[in-house]
Image (cartoon, rainbow, N blue to C red):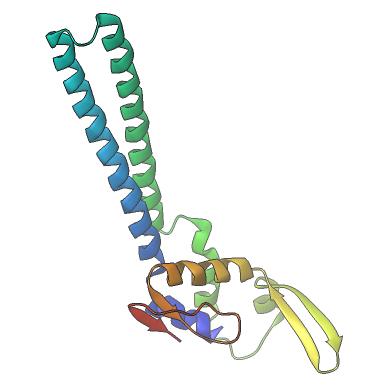
Length: 167
């Protein structure tokens, strides 16, 4: 649990998502601009007689529809960014659990029920604890690696070189 709290303090989890969303938003805004430009050029082609009125109307509607779709995508992305900043997303709920319970002195039933999915007992010396948050944890490590962080730890952890090392 201490390891996850250390990650929470050293790696900007939400910033990774926001950076990715801002990239998508920028691409959508470029698409909006492209559609506006194409519509303007289309009008020039109509005036020059290069395009018929029927073709103009069809192409104009197509560019308008693409633009509206991109504008809607930008609004949705802005809402996602807002939700992340306001902590309204459930994506990091598992991390919030560890922040809330970071300083427990002994394991109680209440503290164990939420994070532990099941405990497998193989024999007297070997058990396996399966957490509800395992998939979130591994997904997060993969995303950290792809964002340029070095993540190291026990066997099976993501390893690589990057801007910042998380131990």
